[in-house]
Amino acid sequence: MNYRQDQNGTIYVILKLNKRQNSASWHKNPDCVVNLFKKKETEKVNAMKVLRLYDANNLRLEEKQKPYPTESEVLLKIASVGICGSDIHYFHEGGTGSLQLDQPLILGHEFSAWVESGFQKGQLVTVDPALPCGTCEFCREGNPNFCEKLEFAGAEETDGALQEFVCWPASSIYPLPEQFSPQAGALFEPLGIAIHALHLGKVFPGMDVGVFGAGTVGLLTIQMAKLAGAARIFATDLLPHRLDAALACGATDVLPADGNEAEKILKLTGGRGLDVTFEAAGDDGSAVETAVIASKRGGTAVLIGIPSEDTTCFTASAARRRGLTIKLSRRMKNTYPTAIRLVANGMVDLQPIITHQFTLDNYELAFKTAAQREGVKVFIDFAS
Ligand SMILES: [Zn+2]
Ligand SMILES: [Zn+2]
Image (cartoon, rainbow, N blue to C red; front, top):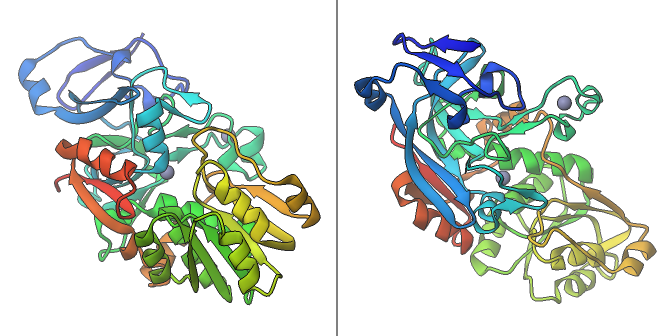
């Protein structure tokens, strides 16, 4: 029988292990651990708040026992969690794409935290929510983002960061320089997505680029395209305040997503179209269509968004006649060190993204605000 003892001498028995048969996740599923010697006082001292999703539109703020790290893990006190479009899908639809909730789940994969255990106690860190196995065929090919045994915070069976404390492998946390805020620290996951998308798009100096959808990932993609030397950056969105943010992030031309934006872009580029287009809307497919129509012949379109209906479409003849290369972006590779350097050196500005902050107790309003697409990024902040 598997058991372990914490620093207070409490013994735990593991009844059932998660698919990752190692200690990093054994305490994440509350049902798999039984506290043999329940001491009411100890429990109270070690209780923490967690926000669990039980079903579509059914989030509950509960208490659970604080976890204890293994030798390879660090106990983290959560600082700030960004609410992502995929969290909203989980909340409203009980899943995202073909992934459906089959057990209660703690959401949250964009997060920063303070180290709570060990000599680095108090250090602000950003956390890579992805834990690839490192040994499957796809990891070995250098594509950990395609890992077939990937665990990801706040998805499937792996609880995320909307709880006061989390244990996470030390190898997947990154200390942040002093000037970083907890909210900035929670933006390295979406920045990683933008970095990966830029790599796929292969933007070179002087190119004309389009970014369709000016949410968090779109705005960061605009900044990355500018850094790569794009001459013109066209940005579209349905919401005027996001177009303003796009300008602040370096877009040269902003257009409302009214169905005519592709035609306008073709006109503004003398009929040529764009070298590289990025779809970052995850809408019903209209941003994908814009990306196709606004592309030049021989251009590249990178699809980043997650469509709510899990299908997307575009005009086949338009893509074919352009000989378009369409790439689908899947998460990211090892982008955290680069992302931290970009922000630390002032090359990427996270400030235009940070617009709304709530406490954990106000989670209902936080999710509502994010779902209504007010501002850009909604954060749930934890007390330091
Ligand atoms: Zn996300
Ligand atoms: Zn793998």
